Structure formats: structure tokens, C-alpha cells
Amino acid sequence: MTSALERRVFLGVPFTPLGLDHALDLIVRRRMDEPFAYVATPNAQHTVAAHRNDKRFCEGHTGAWLLLNDSRILRLIARWVFGFDLPLAAGSDLVVALFQHGVPPTTPVVMLGGDAEVEHRMRSRFGLTDIRRFDPPMGFHHDPAEIERCIAFVLHRPARYIFMVVGAPQSEVVAARIVATGRASGIGLCVGSALNFLTGVQPRAPEIWRRSNLEWAYRLMKNPRGHFRRVFIESFPIIWIAFKARLRRQPAHAAE
Image (cartoon, one colour):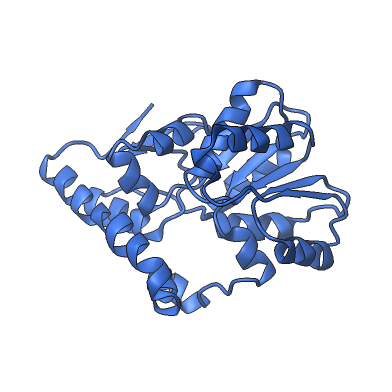
């Protein structure tokens, strides 16, 4: 049986091959006073970037406690092209499951990113009374001083959950640097737009689209300008990457 923290490299990314329920169990059982650890949720876009040796993605993946598969497309490729199962534990589903499991109202929560409306809805819908939010400026990852401000905000506000929603790979890079300080606690969740979906600020694709592995198409249809580059330039090359890996007849996955 796969151990909890075993890694399996697939198309250049070291995934923790866990399904949603197992990942959630590990997260809720981790104590708040344990050293800071973070969860990253790589998808096809992240895998393409890592394949291109984008150091920011590689740094973020290396330091993660859990690297959960966020992509139904990656799971399909793993199953149909390479003949093995890469469990799915999408970040948006993970956050929904976390709140369905129950987050006590007094739980300390930090939001790195997100806006006032998301914070308001989290307070009103889930009764959270201890949310601390810091929204860094656009392009903050180009400014070392702004990155340090993000790190300091987390260090000075101990929390059970730190939702890192400033985009990829910024969330993962900041999380890795928080780990490197050795002075933080709690769990960082690098989960993209998950809080927007959780609170209804941004509608998620209907279930039938998700079950049909077409959530990407729904998002593209709703926001073609915003998602064109992400879909066709940053994500679709995963098909060619997988095709080349299959032609080379090299193992697509290996245990670390």
C-alpha cells in the first residue's frame, strides 16, 4: 500500500498519490502547533511549466508536504496513455470538503490574497471569527520586499489554516520560503481560486461539466479572454509532452 508521503513522479512532477478523502484526513489530523507545512495542487499548467524547468514551480513543488493532483486531464492521461491511476484531489474540492468536515468558528485563519468580499462571505457563511487577511499588490512576486512582507504576515499571525490564493507559482514560492524560516506553524493551502468557488464569488462549472472532464471548457466559455492563454498556451502542451514521453517508452512515473 502506498505510504502517506510517498511521491510518484509523473511527467516531471512529484505527486503525492492520494485521493481526496485520504488527503483531507491527513490535513485535519495535523496539529496547529506542528511546523508549517503546505499543500500544493499541481494541474496541467503547472506540469507544463515544471517540464520547461521553470524554477519557480520547481521550488514550490520541492518544498511541499503534499502535492495533490488537481487535474482530471492528467488523471486521464495517466490512465489511458500510461496505464496507472493518478488519484484526483482537486484544490477546490479539498477546500469544500474541509469546510463540510467542519472548521470551528474560532479557528484562526489567514488569507494571503483574496478580497474583502471573500472574507465577508467566509465570516457570514461559516461563522469564522478569527480571519486575518493580507492582499499583496499585483506583481508582488517581482519585489523581494513584498515577498518578505507576505512571509512576515504569516509568521506574526499563527493560524490553523493559511489559505494562499495569490496565484501559482507565487503561492507555492512564498510557502516554500515560509518553511525555510523554521519559525511558522499551521498548514498552508495553495489552492488557486478555491475560496472564490467556496463562497460563490465565482461560480464553478456545473457538476455535469466536471464529471465530463470539461471544467476547463466551461471556464473558457465563460471567460475566453482570461482563459485562452492558460488553456491553449500554458496547459495544452501537456498532450505533446505526454506523447513524447510515451514514444520514448520511458517510465512516466517512478517512486522517490
